[in-house]
Length: 611
Image (cartoon, rainbow, N blue to C red):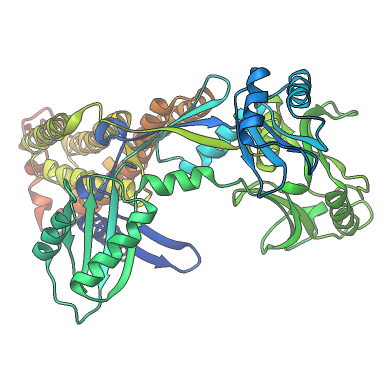
């Protein structure tokens, strides 16, 4: 028992130590082998990431590009220029931009989308005004379909909310526009580290930034000549190079320079083409018997979304289950045929390979090849319903044919609460927490002190998780966190009431603690598991109904409940055992607010008396 107590104490100390360090550091930059880098440098309190309602952010409006580009070439002896072409287009009532290629009579006409009849009207107008073109070709970007816009919406949502914790607002507006609001993306954080021989300080950097015309910025410093400059405005891609050059010219060589949190990064991420890729995955055992079990190794075969012609929802002809039908072009059909011929389980029952499908680096599915597919037509099955199969088809098609978008509006979003309201909310939370701590200490005495310490540990660990994940905190997140504080107090109350009951029965303090914990645990477990089930249901509905507010509340409540179980069962129990080991076993009156009357005899007895 003592060895177990020591190990648990070490675990608690390690968890608390990591949490305190994570909250104390203004920025965290750690390279984790096998997991990449952990970079956390937010401008909120304790380095926490705040959402749109608490911090504000960026507002972007994208529109799908549509239109027709005409390439028109006239005879070499034709007397024609851009003005003549523009006049002919005006006669056809078609507004477009006209550009001439070099000295040749070839013109590029870019305008709104033209239907075939309207295209012929434009051609006839050119014939009447100038003459019959030698070449007349059109390249169309037709208006996007609803499915294409859904696919773009899905890609953007996953790009700006990779782990489901960023809380952006991404939604369709009309038939061809998408609105994106990103929390905190309107400012930038510049981390600059000068060479060791450079002599500078925060005041010098602050004065120089003011000379450069920056306002509303903050400069903090740490060891190793590393400074963090938080700007209220965005530091764009081109501006970064100018700022780095200016800092180097003023102070000296720069060892490291990084800009994060900029809306320019978000815009570049949104505008990138979606990457769909099919990989050949080798598993640790035959897939027909065990499925794909570790170790696994993925190999590229050159099959990407560029080779996919179509993906659509259907049903299996025999079983009637929902499937996703895919069709490759000639090149893709050849690669896919070679792959399925080599790894299908029908001709090779001992095959240990599957096909892994990735979109933007995230695995969508890893189906087993059931047959040799020669014509590039295949089906993906796997316990789909109508919604999940349609979602996968949209992801596949949008990965292959992303709708080109154009940024048409960019602005900043003010926080809904404002800095003053945020400070008042934090003050109200601290006052409420202090009142709760005073009550439990006054009522439960020594046990109340244990509960207070456990509650502080709970708050530290939970906030550290919010920072390290990171979770963008909005009002619903804070609501879930505050509710979980009440659940954490409730767990301690259940434990202390059980201990009090055992003391009332005449047990010693050590025995009352052991029995009290064992009897309180089922109630704590069942109550918290019920809350966790509710959180899962809320997350499920929130993901399907687009309820970001519901998701935020459920996510923080779930994390809070899990941490509260850790602090109530481990922290509180170890602290009570530590108090008992310090010689308080004879002072049971310190753990109950009332005098105890033994049930066996009915005679009055103080809480600290012996049986």
